Image (cartoon, rainbow, N blue to C red):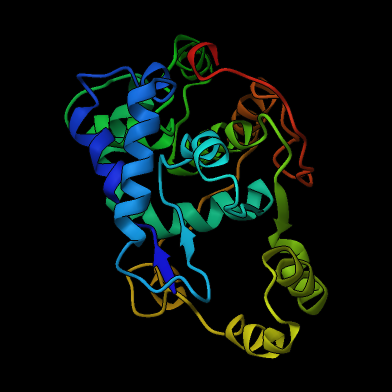
Length: 261
């Protein structure tokens, strides 16, 4: 059974973004109890005999410490892709929808009002702390790809904290699908006899029926690479202690606190 990006916590943040300070809220006892209730409510009607795979969505990353504490038997997977191809794919997919907000935020990257406020919430992953505001004002991202680099950076820094996670690279899944799938199946205690089915599924476009399918994305205007844009991307990545825009991402475990990140 698969739950693909259930939005319960996501909408809770969107609807209450002006009433709560998310970096502090996600460390409260109330939030821990809320996550526990959401998880139990989301899965209680499914037969978990063969397992339930939950793919999280935007701003779900603060649930990781909660899952480790409240549901210690849950197995977690961190899947990553190098920042350059990841950002380009994301920008091509979401470009038309965020065009107006991107224009507004290119002028004022902390303009937290109107159509720009939701984009700012998304691309800071809910972590609009004073330090992150300072980085945004210093760099001033000018297009959706650069904002995606902001999102990628914050997300990876959040998921590098505390205990190490089981890490899967998209690049390894492409270059050695059998070997990588074997690692994943062993981690999840899935019989390896199902690997061939999984390998076949990798050949399909999982977003084919959505607005983010490859065919539709190919019609959108791609990001235009310039030295200035790459330089801004590298300044963002450097601010978060991550590899450069054209470098390989290497998973590292680091401690940090939401409230002072």
